Image (cartoon, rainbow, N blue to C red):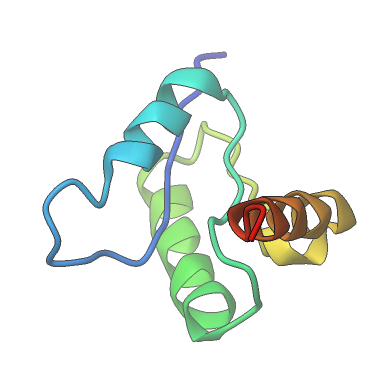
Length: 89
């Protein structure tokens, strides 16, 4: 079965905002929401989008993960990044 990748993220007017997501799409084969918390986009918008896709493509299997911030490893990585930005002084 063919697989696809959907990146569901909040946009920005800033040029180049999508570049990290494009790099991510080139590296991963399984998608997870790029949000730290279970806000309205993940609780309302994403399930509606997935239900629409299921109706359009009944032969495909769609699944999505919880918010990235629900994963301790993600939070550890973000914390390490933030601490690393403090520098030496």
